[in-house]
Length: 254
Image 1 (cartoon, rainbow, N blue to C red):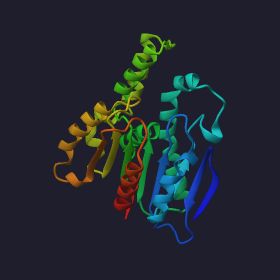
Image 2 (image 1 turned 90 degrees about the vertical axis):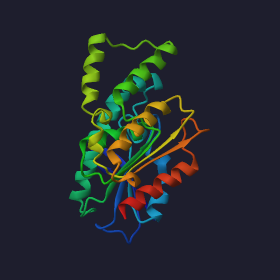
Image 3 (image 1 turned 45 degrees about the horizontal axis):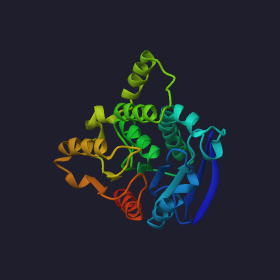
Image 4 (image 1 turned 60 degrees about the vertical axis):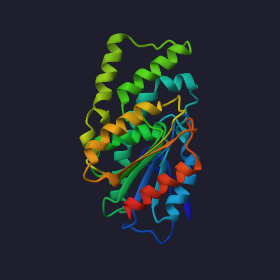
């Protein structure tokens, strides 16, 4: 198994693969969480590569090798900018996979934890070439999640430097990436959700309610949609959740 530090365009990433992989090998682009970095998801890559899947672990803007030393408060101000930037960079990685002739088909999955799972949801809205996805602790409803984050910041005494007009403009922008507004764009693709019921960072209930709405769109292919709820977990994916997510991705890219 090779773990290569590479630069694809302006995106630093870890490229994990074995020497018997070729352009017919399926690929997963796996996205890390807020205040995390690419190497923190190597255990997902290890599981996937052992199941015959090539893996790309990119660093998001201001994270990992792209850190600019911002504080967590400063990073919070950039949260949605980072999310939207990552959504566009997933498309760049897809183009690079094609340019480098690393994938001949569209056997491509996108997955992530927390912020990475939020990015994954936005990618599902924009990119029909994604064959399967895993959303771990992510909120597909961008506008709802943004409102919740503002409430949490207000409770902690942080003043958000944004006028009402600017907030409306931001919501209008987020709406173009918010797949909860157009659930039909999941297009019955195989999607896996994992969420801890005690999660206070990305509320469990909003994601679960959306999943319940989504089930109506999967009536003819119910096995393409799976939600694992962990009663005791907070904002951290359990080992069982990680194994279930990687198994799902490998199975639906085979």
